[in-house]
Image (tube, rainbow, N blue to C red; front, side, top):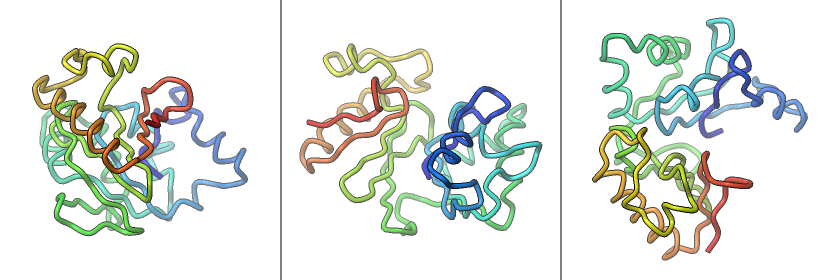
Length: 181
């Protein structure tokens, strides 16, 4: 699984969607985190415990270092601590399980990471307003922490996806969250 959404306490639908697929949170063996914004890690815990009791969790080292060393970001640290012994901090050079390839997608956050698996590129928050940003990648959402890097990531995702004929998945893309060229 890639990211966890808000969590059921904040209106997230992940646990319900898993149930609809006749799955439970204990069926998830791997959890890959793209970045540490609440709407992507809020569902990692339920009642202060790991929501995915069997999951090995993979987080980008740069993202971890930024959010978990800042004063005041207790949510990130609490969620990471819930997976003690199963939390894997990685760099872009590391080999990830299941053939997942990590790509630098910084800009939205310092360690924002895109994941490639098969013919899909999970580019997550590389854009927030597809109708505008597909035509004008230079437009940035206020959430982009480094505008120049965010623009470069948008350009890279679009070109890389096109050159490899990948389906691009993003959590804030319209419709089903997929771009296909």
